[in-house]
Length: 321
Image (cartoon, rainbow, N blue to C red):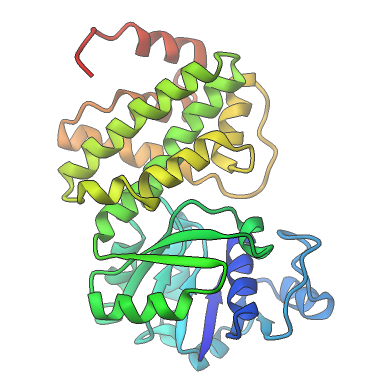
């Protein structure tokens, strides 16, 4: 079987390495000709995963037409770019099982990755690969567990078997809504936790934000039809804990920079910023009280500062947990 991975960022490259080491033939597509050439020549993605060798069974390419030869497609591009990339590649990937490997909510439509794929590729089997993971851990062969969300149970079972490796353990769910929301919302909460730590508010404040933020994740997800157990699993609580407690998380580092009053100079996408705006709109449309998420949205938009944001949250009326 040949697997096509669209997007040669850190996560796409890490998945390519893990699958290739498990014996799969992998086509790693990037829109940048220079990056494809460099990876082919050096057997390394020096931009995103320096120092980790690419197995020989990975073929880097910038030729979209080569994706038509693949049996399975993984879309490892930022969520806000997913619609445009899938639309551009539709002729080469339509009809093949297509798995989104990104997290977030599309700011214009309020849709998650599975819904976006279904919108552009009607009739194509689609799924989502999500959960607590850092690209370098996967690329180095460290044990990692992820969730595969696919509404079609039989198709999900096939994909689960195809993507599992000796170090990558895949769990399966049919709750695509819950998996989408867990992966998206945890990035928003991670920004808030980073801001609290960066501002010097301490670990107790972070624990409070993480816990009450998780309550908001559950509240919105239940309103939108997700299963409670999905949010308690890898794609919800598991991913939330990892992202809110590690400096390896871009969203957490972005929050740290805000809390310290420093500029954020990294070029990689911080999905939580756009997702926060989308969640704030959804909360208003659903008349939901999501004070942490909406405050973080205002913080990312520059409409408030950390001190005022924390003060506003602490001054809310007292209530039962």
